Image 1 (cartoon, chains in turn green, purple):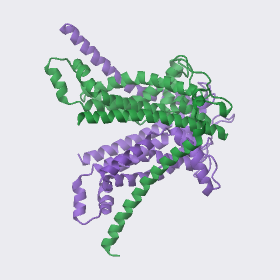
Image 2: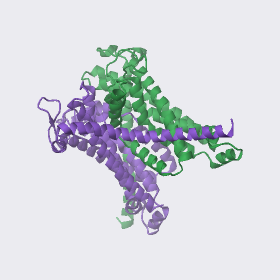
Image 3: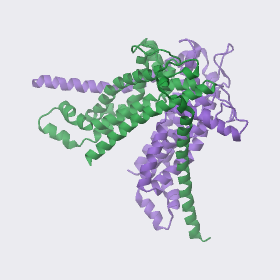
Image 4: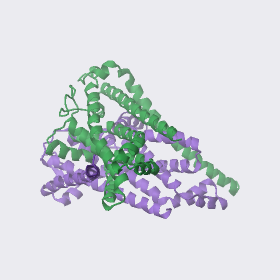
Length: 284
Length: 296
């Protein structure tokens, strides 16, 4: 083989190898989805969605976990949205590179890298014990809100940055104050982008397990939460509970629970993608 | 509204928004405060030397011993396996996406990688315990049903997108002039990629590796489900181990009263976990910033 042919062979080898690696990760994803589907699809029916968990695997359902996930998500959204958007608006529109703004920025970047289970320890100590909320929907939602906060702030800032300066200047030229400009011009035109980021943050929160286990969310619950102070469980914890039992029948339940969880995530993400596309089209 | 009330409203709103932003600092302060408070209480009962360097972890036995090394060892073992998957695979994917792939391939591949990153970790745990472990057992009969190998491999798949997307960003930031220079000297795409572009992007790429390591150390559900709950100081990936995160889950699932030494152990272990990931995140951030300065 000539030197030139060898070099080209090397080039092709690297290309083949990397395509192979990418194909393998695709295969891994497909295998995971197929494995979960083939394990769990027979268990999926209306009764599974509307029944309480049970000692008998065949009669068990995910209703309390589903409702619990929904309530916790509501609390998470209600707490993380105003805080996150407020912080982002401050940093983008007011902060302007001051010393406080820089400190806050570094801090947010660091928070984004803290393992989620550490947030669980914070929630356990502060919300559950010091505030005396117990392992309630409120404590769980607040813990996840702190976890979601950096994501909400970062994505909102991203959206605010896409609003052209001229929109602000036009508003100032008409005599609007800074807040009037933000409220009537900047936020409305950044809204779809903000919403997309929020949905992605919530879709991450809905799959979180570890922090909620840490604050003491129960694994076995046969009632639905009635108020924000009720004990609760969520879908991923119910799945974890079933996975950790040795009987194969419970593994089927876990797989069926995972299918429901993935469908929820897929729905949330599709909404986000559609929104993103619509923004891009509107801009083009 | 008169001008003065208007100004007053503006001032109030700015203060309120500032308070939101400061709230994020309070979260950090809260995390550090809570961990410190409980860890200090823990260290009053257990000397720090025997916590950090002890090799037996039996906090719930009547003859309790608090040597955290088995948990740290389990964490590092699983993370190392994950890195052995994610580093080569992630770097190769990044090189392909940045140097070879045409835009259409990129548009298909990147969302797939994003999906891999978005799958809840409890799902990966299920996959590791009930699919990967039985599959591996057909080749490795001595593999026990809880082990470090299978969650390590699955965790590698989970952090692969992180490595590949951050490394790709780093490769992308290398100025085209460097590539063109290499091509002008007769280099193939492989030679340009491996000898010019990757070395030029090395600090950005290492930043992605370190960040992935930090993510692996803090990952919880995969190991809690598939690695077992037996603290054991070993390098053997075929036997059950327990990671720091899995220990916190194990205690949280049980009934350990607040204020007891068992309750405090999870904060001491959490503190150690926080410090480890924090140092890694700082290192990664420092490398990335240095890289950006070079090509600013």
